[in-house]
Length: 292
Image (cartoon, rainbow, N blue to C red; front, side, top):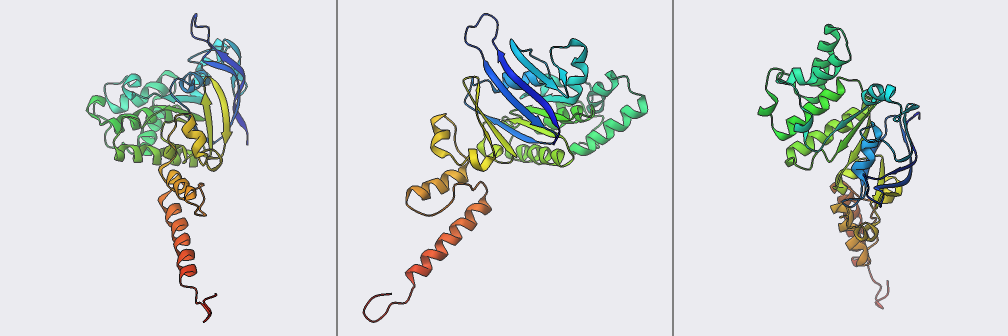
């Protein structure tokens, strides 16, 4: 797997604040990875991702995108084309008077031919499911549709990685499901996803979970290794995935189930196996002397 982003000894402090928001952080992100970043409020998640496309520059250390340093002002346009960002509030990055005008803004500023801009706009809108809404004013869209529009604008720039800062936090269940399904679809197309979330159920969808606390990266691993640590997550003020907590509660009662379960299907399979074993033990025939 080719490395796209390399973070080396990254330290960052805001203004005259003595305590840095990021402390000597090291991280490598590969091509096509789906990464979830979790951690308590104020731990530095947003500060970190704003360094990945040079919205912030390190106080010390270095961030590179495809070997391009974010400190090099001549590389900023290319870095931001390769690493696109979706903010928590999509209204903050919608600039067009219509859906298609907004999506065309990025590739148009790249100086691409009109035909290529048109192709990218149509393809991006089809990918996110907004085809047919080209002439709609963005303010008339739902919250979920605005997030899809923000994603379409990035896709038209042909990024390698899309970074998202709690993109589903203000969406209803249908909007959340739509956005999350699209993120998995984009990953299948080879686009890397870096997703800040407070939902451990959303984090479970990733290939890799990063945990931050007080400006430091304190854990990095598979969802099964990170999210199954129920008591540790709670000590950080994080709520484990609902299914995982259910299985953990069963463990506390002495039942032999795994906390490496994140979906309803996982839980059903585990509990069905448990009940089958309990039933078999209860119904086991006994000999005349009362022994099995």
